[in-house]
Length: 200
Image (cartoon, helix red, strand yellow):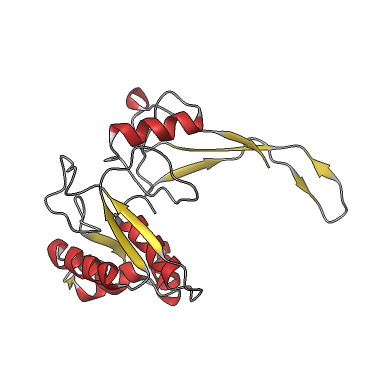
């Protein structure tokens, strides 16, 4: 597991909790290599919003959190411990949340925390890094994908467009298709797309 943010910690936690005894190595480059936004070496340090969005049961954010809780989400357990008043949203104290998440992950007997920058793509691996990915790792990801550069988009408002898709119907007829997904939360003038098409 590469990346000790929310996605990396949640994925490491989920793998370690599956019950098959597999040890997960979670790579985090901080504090060996810091970023411009992070202040500590703690896992899952929030550098932007302290909100995990709506708790209203009619809202998709709430439904997603409900599903995550049923699956034993380590992130949401830590968020509940660090909760602060946030109206209809699940808001957290950033420092308390990072402390709780860090302690939870670091204490798990099947998660090994490895500090240091990852500069090549290990295999097998889950790459859970975002816009603060180091240049070396960004280059390795771009090379593996066969693109010149990477673009990170705000996942809060994705637009998914289906160009064509290949699938077999119940009657056995095949339709040729290709699917491509793109997000548009970055202004077009600043967007560098890494959208990939695939044969389904």
